[in-house]
Length: 480
Ligand SMILES: [Zn+2]
Image (cartoon, rainbow, N blue to C red):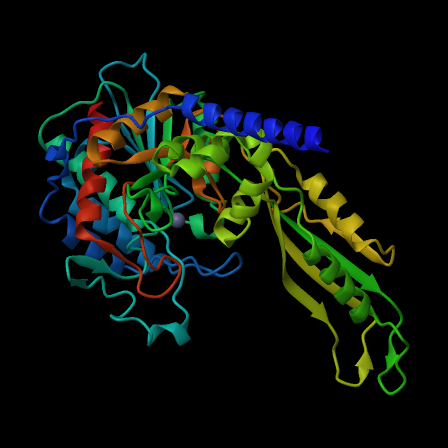
């Protein structure tokens, strides 16, 4: 007995030593750069311009609903008159009436160009939500050093910041080394099928392979990473896939006064419960792994020990990440019912019940994996399972965090945000830039705005300092 205890004691000691040695050996540090704030001096009118842009109601209502073309025309006139240097000097192509690509020719045509993207459309404000806004939702009010209104964050801040930076540089008679394309879509909020899809195709058709495609998505976050006591800049390097799965149950209905033990609705209901009871297997993707690696130096010793010994603590880390819905979505393919249809009359048992699940697919898994998971979870042949093909999008290719594009962006962020940690991350929503993925290996999602509030919701707003920082950021990219 004594021998066993001794052996166990020695084994535990040895394990502890291995854990500690692994932690200490893992002594990667966070890079330090001298911060240069000189880029952040924006045109004093930039905030005014963003305010004016918000007041133009470029709303994407829905896939099948028409847009108000008068507002989109107004927006075109607004950019033409607000940015006269761009209007006079940069040739513009128009795609499907309201999406634009400007070309700023660089000195060296042998260099691959950069693409700066943003979208001009916004989501609507629900009538019931309007009274909950602090200011009218399309007022563009400037209050407390903040610009308020639908589109302030998503994504007119980027449209205006790109325009301001280019206009200022043109005024200074600056010419970039490489060609810069400015791409503005008009239907990102309804999947970019007429805007980004078309203009990205133009790049493909002309075999123009950008060395950087920069779009919305990542930001500077101090809230979710408060424990690190440093701002965290996350650059999107890939996007989850998108698939809808339809479940259909057909069982003869009848009079509701004499129900059989199981109806189509009952069977569908059970299928939904069974799918929701489980999740597809969790995975720490290479992107999340790198993110954890980069935050590690700022974590406590205990956390560092866990992160440096994933061979032992993988389950612990996954369990932690599963606790919040945001981080859970980073390690799982998600599945949630979003539409249910059945029944026509209160006293008729319907013979058909249908549900649609919306799934966001993790890189490394496919839409077929999702279908197989659903069939297995449902485990009932009466439930027909079919994936929709119309909106199907497999997970995107991943831009390497070792790529020149990532390194360039990273350096600019280190130079403009004191004490920042920069890390790659996985976009759980979809953006216009996905149309470039697979064609360019340099698609990244980031703008240096901090803890943005209210996008797609109530009181969308952005600080004037965020706008100025973003103008400076684009200038640095253009100036290299
Ligand atoms: Zn957006």
